[in-house]
Length: 448
Image (cartoon, rainbow, N blue to C red):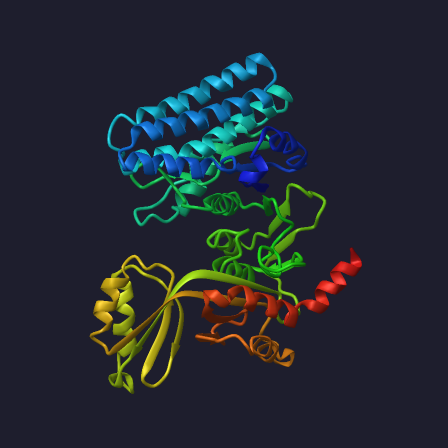
């Protein structure tokens, strides 16, 4: 069994959907997980926002624009009249359900129902194309039948495995299944979702539940790059990463991979391959339990951080001080990214400032509090346990002209994290690229 997930750009048009059949063929059973067509989720989020604001007229206008877009795609993709008519009827029913939600104030359940339509529509269109137009055999497997959250809004692993196995058992001779990413049900049985980027997470959860031999994540870029290609020119794809290295990069800003998506695959030792639908012959990136010898493989950056420093003379040798401090963040359900300590101060970062005023009010009971906003974590990932590489020297030499706010080194054998002002991010990524990867880039360009 293999699981193949295709992102929004991979199913973003009739032309892109026509290219998928060549990518999903294989001798083994396969589950194809589809995202919503590119732009759809943003449109649905905008519609929900308008409804929350009470602007039904604008919401209805946006819904109709989206409906017309899907009708154009359906007619372009499904050129057989009977197939098109049946699919368009399903499209109309989906949009009728969205229009129906505009008549009353929008509830949270209504918003989740709106957001689920993108994946339902993309899988409908592709399934009808694959079976109705190409005459191929495939089963549309509704994710809402087996993907579920528990009462803590975490994936219910046992439920997913049991119900996916039961769904697959109904089709013992079927080789290809098509299902939705992102969407699921919650513990009450209502439609819910795995949040932004959740289709990657769906693929990994499905792969783990099906005991797959490989999970493939197809996007519009050739694997995970060594640096941010939006900021640095001449980046190159990394051919192999360990699960821990990939998880660090995903969490600290590598956009190609959802931060949670690697965890179920890593737990079951299932390799994850990142591939490019625009260049299907490219090798992409293989993520597994193996690591290479490169000291530093890649750099990623995470914006939107807030740095908080608590200075207190009571901290020195005070038993339980750190526990009490961290309990403030636990009470406000706010996670911490980086921590550094001295004898009289603790500095840390958070990426969610929703409860910042309440947190600061409590922290002032411990001592003097300083806050710096607009901070960025630069994360350097690789096999850092090999002492002879001199990794830290290379990093800090490259950053010698960049003001450093915090440094975290040694907490992980795969990570050096550095906090800087966001205004210095682009310059930091470029000097790190020159200092760490320039020779490797020249070799890649020579091979090309």
